[in-house]
Image (cartoon, rainbow, N blue to C red; front, side):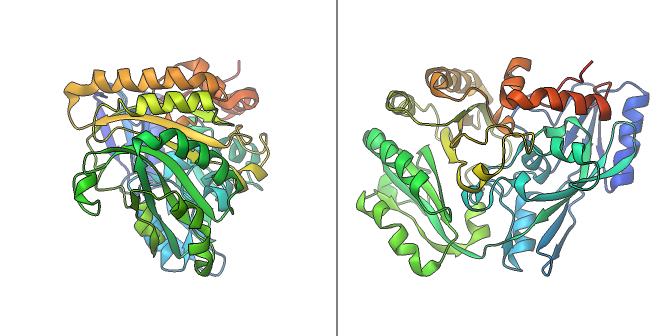
Length: 423
């Protein structure tokens, strides 16, 4: 799906290595790409004939249980953070797969199991150490380099290389969660119920809607193997004594699979890892949605029935609750009024199927995009052009372009969802 061939990959072990790479790339007019610890939907962690600054060896973490903070190096994955923070009964809101890189997910915004209760990942970011285009290193926080800190929270890798993040830890230990699945012929009924239920549910409850083909193995029962289904993957982080009552309306819908139970939070955040190992072909399309219309539900059901491969899927992540209590201009992420971040993903191990994946994904996206809010979560985007980038930042784009001009006037960091420096 993505076949880029860098001239060199520098596996950095500390911030000094990163500074060396930035200076070398700038002084020799070599294209730079930044790879954190994980993946990039559009292949923007790689660059043809250029230098990849690979942070994946920088995986140190320090948890301060008294201050409830978690300091994380730029090459960490979320599984590293979950492991370290869980020992102290803490968690940072982020993602649904533990192999996702901390850096990319955070800088794009950060959506996951804890969004409704604790906000986006950027809403829990307290400061960042950043190597700038001139090779200098600064701290960005609400008190230092506040403009840069504003831009980092949703503006992607446009402004420098973040070598360390400081997050607020939130009290999360055992959660009540897992999947509930229904047959695909109930899609319209379940989606209509879900869109109303989740927005009225306590903020401790998050559930993202999903279309999937049931994997042929445990823990799924054999009679469901390879069956196309709709469902919701739940995470309840509130009082465990109230969990059964919270899920009573879900049970009333008589799911074909009720896989919800108590578990450590890291177990839920890594549950999909075996299904989506590294090396698969992925093609993405995404949108924000303020509402899910009856007309769009008909289209969702139609395209779900045509999912071309077992790994192909669609997710709708609720981004209301705590994420709504941050203003549209308070961070670079502007879609604070949206209720869902949606992503359509064609996935398969076989490169020969890449056109099939793309055609299904784009066709599905074309059918539901008219009901969207216009832009998309940048972490779910391929290389889709400048117009889509601007649509994803809306009124914040001009301010981001001004900050880009201050910190990276020559657009050294352009292998990303690029924000052009204001002239």
